[in-house]
Length: 353
Image 1: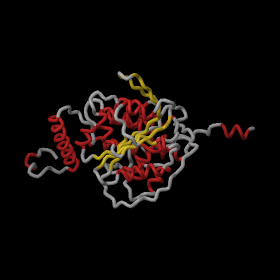
Image 2 (image 1 turned 180 degrees about the horizontal axis):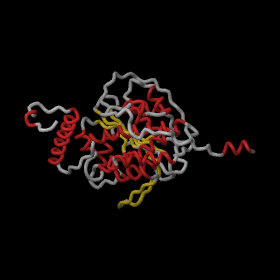
Image 3 (image 1 turned 90 degrees about the horizontal axis):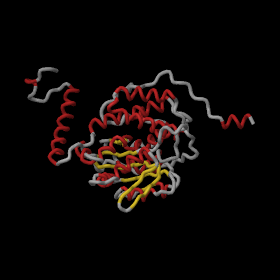
Image 4 (image 1 turned 120 degrees about the vertical axis):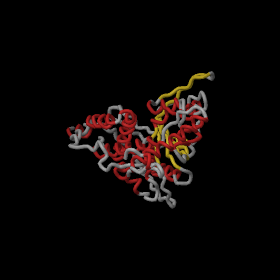
């Protein structure tokens, strides 16, 4: 009887770590993926099996696929579903990274759980998800630009539904055709061919579409690799246990977010989701110090990406042109200031270093 009680009883919480790297000890800069420090556990192990692929696309893709698994927070305070969009130019390998991630993790009932159709509207997405029960679904789109274009149609409620399903398992549609409700734990993995920040600003433009930006994690890479078909071994993560989120994690999350509250509020929530998913897949009963530090380093990388790739605010073609030129000049200025190098010919009018 005592052995049975011991088996059922939850394990004792781990002691609070003596120190936690709230700030990045390596002081990473730029948009390059920070590497080992931003990856954790078994998902990191899967990524390292494919050194030819770009980790800046592969690891976020693994997070999106893993978030489709049956992962829960013990206290049900943190959701596990994620939206991931891989940004990059055509032909650099975004598709190979996303395909490798999908092939690397076994998703129960993948025939229905993975949806590769493009929803044409809010009602179309509701039909795809169904209204019978709350199941995990992965919207997989190699051309996620088409989904964004559907979202940008004037009067479309598709972006609001996508935003709502990031926070809840239930969403609804009400129009002249009637009312329709859908239930799902929705995750998204999409590839967006995007050459520069101005093109990104057009996709995540004004009005309703811009509200989706902070709900996405962006994969990014500019590294071109010589592609070889990867040898993929599918991993099974069955019988996943709920993960406990210790009190110190909430304190650390607040301390990290309070450094830059304007930009880190939503990123802090992403960090909790990433820590939850990576801990569950790794078999951890609670989020560990190393797990949460990796999530913070991942979010600091996202912060740097968001400084360059921003949603557009322009509503006319003239405003879009102005916004593109202004953004390019502003980024050039920041680069010159950081390097301390004045443009050629401007030395004579430079008054301060």
